[in-house]
Image (cartoon, rainbow, N blue to C red):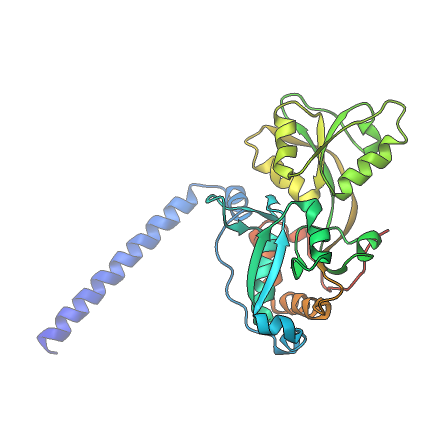
Length: 308
């Protein structure tokens, strides 16, 4: 063995020992937290999902006009954690829907441009050709299917939450009568509360906000008694509130989420095939697990399979 080889061997051994020390230190740090702590940290991680290979059968369904542009324009309201919200930089959109949008683009061999749009302006903008698709926690309803196509990709119900220090006891929508209730504009929750209000002897004071973050603020500030949101969003708001919010009542009306697609751009089938490809290859499950929302997973993506 030459002198150069001896030095190389010793250097390599030193590097191995150094790496082993780092691994042991990392394991020691990880051991300081409970399994529950690790799960909480995982639900909200901003780590990257592995790149997805192109599914040529799905990519071949992309209309030539969009293929020529090379970019899929996606609208979402980045105020609805953990589904879609801004990262700490205040500019980068992250969340379950954001990761799915990226993965759909990779599956179809398209770049993805994500645009933050106020929730109630998304579907009109989509119908006006401002965006190609929208992934923003839309419940797939027959009413929405009149304006856009919906490609299902998740299921969620509605959850209630309240101020933890001054809680309001609510079990069902009927219990909202006489209370001040916060909801986001344009959501099924707004529709539910307004429909219930017509049945109340004592009316509901409905506080409607453009962004879900303002709904949360209405509860923590005491402006509203109780809030409604999609079940994963309500649960996430409570988890991230440092004890200021608390869940109340029971989730209700589980229904599919749909990716909204402009009826005239020819992308509906391509999006459905892309979502199904992600389900089949395991990327979909990985994304849902990353954001702590695996309970809403589906096995089959469908077109216009909404609820009344």
